[in-house]
Image (cartoon, rainbow, N blue to C red; front, side, top):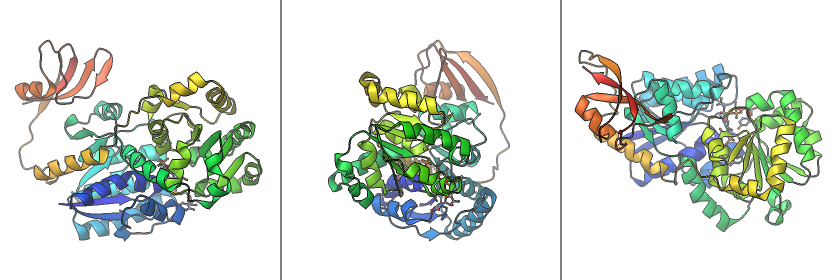
Length: 440
Ligand code: UD1
Ligand code: UDP
C-alpha cells in the first residue's frame, strides 16, 4: 500500500505529523506533497524540524495568490505527482486550499480520498474554509472525524455512516507528545528569552489571521481597542504574515506595537508556541487549531469569531465566542482574570477531541480498508439496487450492527429523545427512533 499526504500550511503540517509518523513506524510506503502555500521558514520548515518528520518528497511551490490562481496551480501540480506515484489513498487535512485541490484531483483520478478532520461545519459560506471542507467531503471515500457532533453534520447532509470513522483529532496527539519535549527543552526562541517569558505572569497569547477579521479595518480596530485596555496582561502576539501585511497597510501596526504590554513577535516554532500557550492565563484567537489546543492544554479561550466549526469547545465550556466586539472581548477577558471560579470552570472543561490516539485509529482504519479492497475505486458493474428510506421506533434489545444485518438495511439517523446519535455498531437501539435505508 502507498499513502500520499497532501499539505500546504502550518496547521496541516502540525496535524498530519502524527499520522505521517505512524505510517512510517508501520513501514507503509508513503509520499508527502507540499503545495508551497506557506513558504516562510517560520510557517513551514520549522514545523518539519520541531515535529521531527522528514521534509516533503515534493514541493510544488504555488506560493501566495488569489484563491482561483492558487487552487488551479495546486491542482495542476498535484495531478502530475499523483499520476506518477499512483498512491492507493490520498490524505488531506482540514479545510485549506490544499484540501480542495487535493481532494478534487484525487477524486477525478479515482484515487480514494481520506479526509482527516472531516465533518466540521461553521455554516458560514462566506468562509473559504467552509467551501473547501464541504467540497472535500463530497469526494471523499474515508472520513476521519474528530467528534460525534461532526459525524452528525455529515449524516444530516445525507452521508452514509459506513465510511465515517470517529478518531478524535490528531492535534491532541501532537500536543501531548510535543509538550513533554518542549518542557524538557525550554524556550529556544530569542524573542521569548528577551522577554523573560519564564518568569512572566498574566500571559495572554494572541493569534489572528482569519481573512474575515484581519482584512476588515473596522474589526481589527475594535480588537485593538480591546487589547489597549487589557493593560494588566502581558500580551504575546506571534504575528501571522497575512496579519502583519494588513496591519501595516491599515497603518495600525505601530499603534499596536508601541503599547508597552503588547509584544509582537514573529511566528513561533511548535515547541516554543506550545510552551507559551501552556503557560498562558488566557488565549485570544481566531485560529481553528488553537481553539482545540486551548481545551487540550486546559487554558481558557476567547475566540474572535461570530461562529465556529468547533462548537464542542463552546458546549464543553472551554471556549467563548466574542466576535470582534470590544465590549464583549473585555467583559469576558476581565471575568476570566478576576473570577477564579469562572476561570477554573473553563480550565476544567472536558476535552472533546480524544485522548491522543487519533493517528493510530486513522492508520488502523486505512489498513483495514486496504485489506478489504475498499480503497479500490472502480466504476460499478452491477445493476443498481434501489432502496427505500423508512422510519421506526425500536422496542427490542438490539444493536445497530444487529439491526442492519437482520433487516438488510443501513441506519441513517438515530434519535435518542431529542439528541441525535451516531450509528456506532455497538450502540443499543431500544427506545430510540431511527431512519434507515432498506435495501431491496
Ligand atoms: C491559510 C488557510 C487558512 C489557514 C491558514 C493557517 C486557505 C484558504 N487559507 O490562510 O484556512 O487557517 O492558512 O495559517 O487555504 N504569507 C507569507 N508567507 C507565507 C505564507 C503567507 O508572507 O509563508 C502571506 C502572503 O502575503 C499571503 C498571505 O500571507 O498572501 C495569506 O496567505 P494564504 O496562504 O493565502 O492564507 P492564510 O491566511 O495563511
Ligand atoms: N502555531 C505555532 N506558532 C505560532 C502560532 C500558531 O506553532 O506562532 C500553531 C498552533 O499551535 C496551532 C496551529 O499553529 O497548532 C494553528 O495554525 P493557524 O492558526 O495558522 O491555522 P488554523 O488552525 O486556524 O487553520
